[in-house]
Length: 350
Picture 1 (spheres, rainbow, N blue to C red):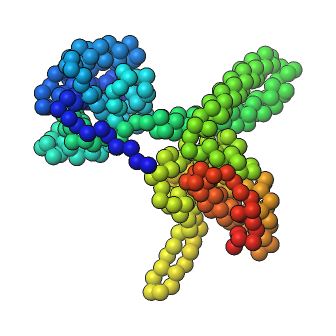
Picture 2 (cartoon, rainbow, N blue to C red):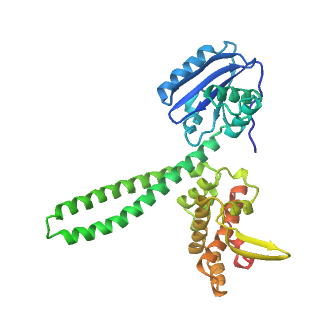
Picture 3 (cartoon, rainbow, N blue to C red):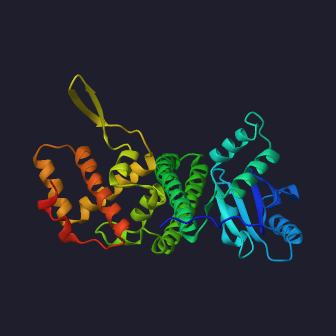
């Protein structure tokens, strides 16, 4: 079910927010397009935001205005300003597409002139026109899932590199024992071990956060599938985003770059290897879901064995199971149903 912004009335007051890397520009305008505050610029800190919110409260009318806060999306820099705790209770927070803001500047005759003040004017016009996507708890949970899965993935990559480096350092330390370099080699190994312990702690913390967030997301039912634990399901959720924006599993599979490249001319068609055109993160998540099925689900094992008996290589089998995993994951999230093994018996996997 889609969520729409509240309509603009004569009592509406809009707060336009333009986010930078370290600072924020803000202005306040009433429904009659009269500027009542700003533009003001402040550091992106909790204390500075609280001070500016106090200024905004001071210029609001006493008869109960409906406040709409419009935040232009800016990579990940705007995410803290979408949190419910950032603004007073009762204020409607909307996220604006930066492409729409750019187009609004063009309509205002300022396509080649980009300043914070002009961006605030464009955001204000969009808010008064009813644009913007309301920020709900669902979007916040999905955003946190995406952030924690990305954090865990980075830490796992560093941990793997550190382990490989540690093996080399241990070998060097062993060879340096009889020499004057032994003390330095031992210090290097000890430093790497401390780093490895810290990485393990951060990975464990990320997995605990994912375990708390996943049950509150639309992807909660994925853990009912054999081999799909919290980490696999959360990686898929973080890579996919809001499932409502995907019409079906075919679009998800194609967006991952796992669909075969095709060449067709003069009535002749040739299918090649996977296109690899799409999200690498989503591609890895789908492959991981397929591997989870392959290793734990009896029907998937039988399906993979049949493909192997036909001479298919491991990469082809992995892509086939990722394709099946895409359909299963999409159906479970769409219907909010638990995995029914009888529904995916080997006789239907053709």
